[in-house]
Image (spheres, one colour):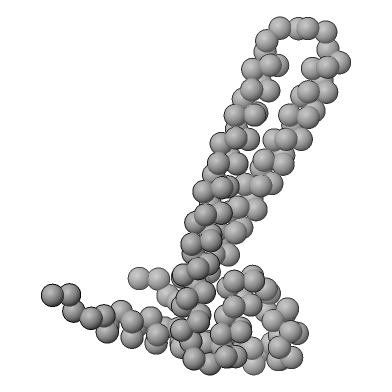
Amino acid sequence: MMTSKEFLNQAYRIDERINSKIEQVRSLRDLATKATSVLSLVPNSGTRNVHRMEDIIAKMADIEAEVNSDVEHLLEIKRIVREIINDVDNVTYRTILELRYLCFKTWDEIAATMYYDYRYLLKIHDRALKAVDTKRHYKTNNKPAIM
């Protein structure tokens, strides 16, 4: 079973993967633009470059489809993470968890926003994770029996 921190970090990892794929599409688009420029400068030299362009466009379409799927997954994970965070009673804990795991803020950004010392923030974060663990444990062990 994942720790609370690992579970909450899923959204960040998916977001990073999406950003990586968007960068790949951008790179392929640049490559396609360069290939188009070369094609327009070279006299009709056959079909080799046309097939290369088709391959680039197909790769872009595949990656864009993956991005769309990943975005749907990210939205679902964020919904679940938001529910888990909202179950935490302490407002300060919730704020720290939201800033870190939903807004993807760095520790320095959170410390500055909340006017906390960096080390103190990490201690509070640790307590917030324990509160999440407690809520997750309680929910798991107190499900109503199905008859």
